[in-house]
Image 1 (cartoon, rainbow, N blue to C red):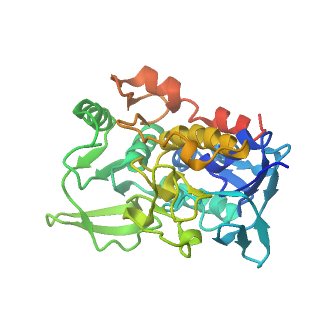
Image 2: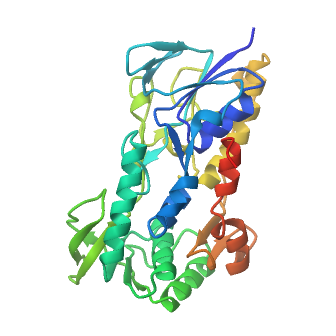
Length: 359
């Protein structure tokens, strides 16, 4: 009899894992949204909402043998997943990959895909009307957003505010230095080493005045708070031995287990295991989980498995618009051509539409 694998969350880990395992086990993917939200394209969709038709991808053609259940999971134990309506789905193994939340419009609020479309259209209209834009937070999302606006709307005055002394301080200096040069060349003003205080909203763009930690005030027609993601970990709250780390993430052992239950695994943005909250992390974790769960379904034990090892120095691709950008690829830092071909031009839209059975 085939082993039953329940996967909670249909993001980068969950969708890929369900697809890769559906011919090897009895797979059930539990996902409350009707569409896969392709996060990198949501940044560019702020300046080009027409991308939404490819960035929001229906789940209905993802699986051919596995089962898709459109519902929200509320809890999991060692034998079943409980859904919001009280029903339960039994399984032998469970993978929790419920992802993270981010500010509007980069991810949906709850399960509301039509609301996300409407939010993107509304914020695009606000952006069109704005002359001055401030972006609070200079991680990957904030940096890419600044580049997208500067490329598509060169008449706007864009200010990017970073609490750090340079862009991507955990990477080789060349990456941040080159991106800084290109953003400034495109007209983006960058403020380093300052924190914005008393933001009116942490989750949605608004108009107003920013007060920085050094005392400077910046008035903007549109302020984007882009201060990082927080893991959606509530489904694991009741498990024995669960420990939360930073950004609401759950600590896991070397086999990605978040609790004392041997058959429950956590991955992606949810799991604190040394990887950042990125698609690059998912690209490493997914293959490990596929191999591990395939072995378990064939009769192996968890202790037979080679432990997961996170990225030592994870690569990162940072387009600033469709033509330019820089990337850190472990052995070297790449410029416009490599960044454009690997990510900037297509934003992996072809890859993920293909994964979900779309063309």
